[in-house]
Length: 293
Image 1 (spheres, rainbow, N blue to C red):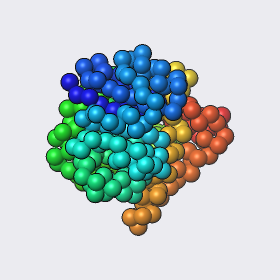
Image 2 (image 1 turned 180 degrees about the vertical axis):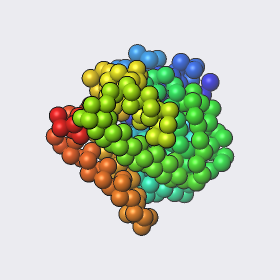
Image 3 (image 1 turned 30 degrees about the horizontal axis):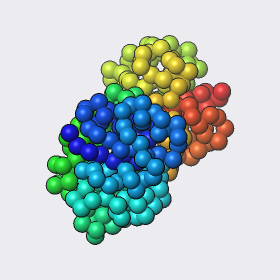
Image 4 (image 1 turned 45 degrees about the horizontal axis):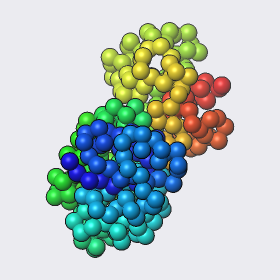
């Protein structure tokens, strides 16, 4: 059993914490939301009055925060000043690559080992402990952190040095966002031309256009039982979160001097969808905008 600190107990962090507690770890938790703190206490964690207290006397500090500025602030102003020597730092937030690398450098300069470990799998994966972790950081830190990540996830991939976990995450989600739009366009076109959606699914899911966005997350009701389309697009991964990741991908592309026209188009389309629809719907609901609804 390890003693852990966990900062950021939202839709993803809360279930991740619960799985660590179930595995027998002693977890000190902090979040700005009283409701999130109450859920953490119900899950068996001890709650603290501030983020600094969650960092003291623990073997590892885990964070799940909204964006790069939050991560820079929490580590720069709290974690690095309060964590004990030798504490492993694991940030599971999805943030910009530059922030991840800057915070990793700050941690290393203070003698801490740190991993950037963003996740894929949505709230369902967080609850089930089946997340994919894309992990950047030193080999020694990965070896220390993997047993904890194994509790929360099913597929743990060491992507290389600091920040590479974020690179993998935003590349993956740029591909996913563009692919979902392409799948949606195909189903809407088939619908308007009179081809049954199940027939199209049966063909495409076993041929050259087969992909996760179609096979598992088909954006129209019926063909894929687990798809949010069958639950009125109740979110597993919101359109707002997809837009966040697509914007991160475009910032990284600009920094790297690489052209990503499909990624840029996907970002523009999801911005339009979020501005004119409920951004808290699942990202696959973009099919309705494409349909003209």
